[in-house]
Image (cartoon, rainbow, N blue to C red; front, side, top):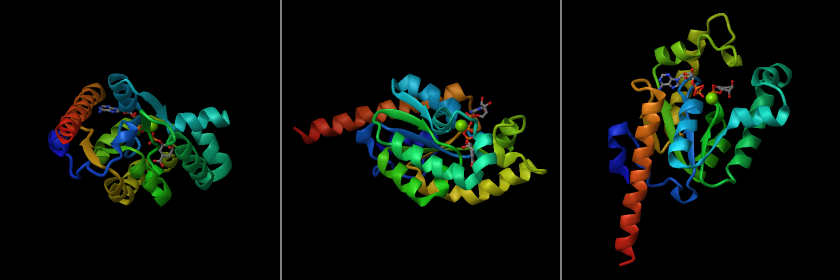
Length: 202
Ligand SMILES: Nc1ncnc2c1ncn2[C@@H]1O[C@H](COP(=O)(O)OP(=O)(O)O)[C@@H](O)[C@H]1O
Ligand SMILES: O=C(O)C1=C[C@@H](OP(=O)(O)O)[C@@H](O)[C@H](O)C1
Ligand SMILES: [Mg+2]
């Protein structure tokens, strides 16, 4: 199925992805478009959409910034790992993870094993443009949020790459166009798999 991803800047083969689960996980920095594109992708592929942050908010009844305020980042990360473990029991979902989900090796392993992981990559400039007005990301409430974003990017980019089966540039196209292209590519790879199976089964 690898060649079908070529136009979407794939750097890694998707051979080792757990495609049988039908699960698609989006990873990447804050502002990469995981939540926005994830929703659209689920719609186009007729899968169920989950956003890990939204599920944590539903469970706790408070916003992500409030969790950071009360329990600190460590408390939030613990909730995030528990939530991912629970969501990954599902099949046929599109899951938008939080930008820091890849920090924990346990999370990275869970994601890699549980489905096809897509890294939505964007430049720090794009990420900054998309997040600068947003007060819902506690890690960016600092005196120099752009610098913080660049530091997080440098720290996390290798982890996203390590976790992902597919890497997609999210800076050059609108969220809708990107979701449409991705849906086509993923649906197409299913077709190719089917053909392979048919020929294997005679
Ligand atoms: N490909 C894109 N092009 C332009 N804007 C985008 C794109 N993807 C997301 N956005 C915008 O960027 C902001 C952050 O997107 P969001 O989906 O919340 O990112 P994430 O969940 O990765 O933090 C939103 O305002 C969204 O509309
Ligand atoms: O990058 C991060 O560490 C975080 C990203 C946020 O999600 P998005 O990536 O959807 O903005 C959210 O999980 C929390 O504020 C922490
Ligand atoms: Mg999000």
